[in-house]
Length: 601
Figure 1 (tube, rainbow, N blue to C red):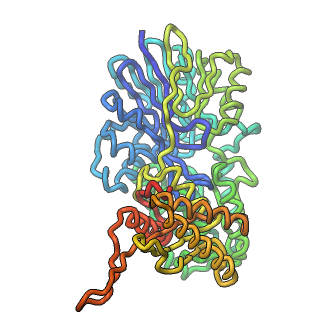
Figure 2: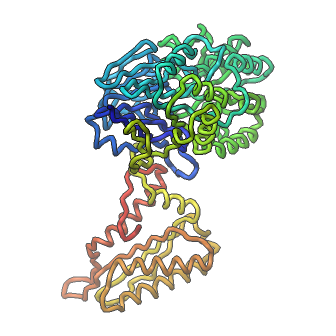
């Protein structure tokens, strides 16, 4: 009897960042390796990837990474994963091409080359497990579901999917294969829940293409189209609409150019000869003949639109006669950013149109599709994945409606271990699985303390106090100097600054008068009393940074002038370094590894 564990490292009770480990005896199979874009409270963070500390302790068991499709939520964390685990990567031809592109853009793993192309006819034997694949419909071609055939039954992971009877080759679901899997017997099904809130019928891709073409046809000015770079189907629809309306297309964005070139090489994207032109050439044409296709870093177009609307993009400006046409459906985590972007776009004078306002262009299964998949598979146990808790719970509800017992449905959290023992799945131990945050080139060096400080700095600012003392003479050499940023406007708050300096002077002198002088106690005392004082007067809690410097004043000696000598006090050095680090960090706008003195936490 095989020992089986299913462990989600991401993708449950959250959007994106899909990564699931299936452990069968002494082998671990990694299903997808994705990232997610940060939510609003993750200040300054570029992307978030799973925490795989458990896998590091069991790295010898990992047999490979199996990818379902080429979107960032499935392959985005792969470059970081390969830094720690040099294991084979399996996926369809298009998925591997996009994965290679992501990996090559990372200097540390760009030479990795252990890729294996699979398709719906591929079967791979790994001792106790046979891995096979089945095609599904999504917005990127060659999307595959994954089957792990074990002695106890099949474990099936759908990946992103939907059912669309008008889907063309490369996007079409193999319904016969789904039925066959159900007949063989499915022990556990991990199924896409991202569309569980969609009660109506999802718009067919054929109809989405017609809608885009119609929009192009009835627009007289220049069209700026925003799309996710890896949504190959949407890009193809945009190119066809441009050709139909006799417009030329400018591809704006490095990510988009690379992905289009990759898709063309894989024969998954058709670009008619002469359709693409440069921005310089487009500026010579009448606006009614131009389409500009934009995306952003790692394929996210919303922030790119913000940059253009703000005038931060010197090569492209919006005009009164432009139509800004957003053909993507941003994640729920981006809702605030989307509304902010809409407002910014309207301020430019351009017309704005979001495809999601008129259609349901989701690439994920709606409620009917999810129940159809359940009926195809007839799983003994069901594990909804890929979505926030409310979506997982709704999917579980839909599963009960088609006859799956409630006690055979698990809504896991990250790190939950579902163990199969004695013929049953049960919730076993729990692993400590957090998020790993990427900020600039730093991987995992931003923790909760740094994020807390960023949040406080953004809300209440910083208050720096610099005092110089002579500890031997037990006196303050110079009156404390106050520096404030983002807290209050100094010029109109002289009295507050003077009172703060007087308070600090009293606290420092009080500590100097003590029999036992302690640097830590001094700074903590300054911090606490100043914090109470500032809150009483402003109802704000700025980050307070006391910097205490010490000098020794020597008496005059014959032939030598009075000198001041800085004491090489370790604590003082730490304070000064931390003061500089905080200001340097704010200037750069990008954090690397943040080390803080224990007493300044």
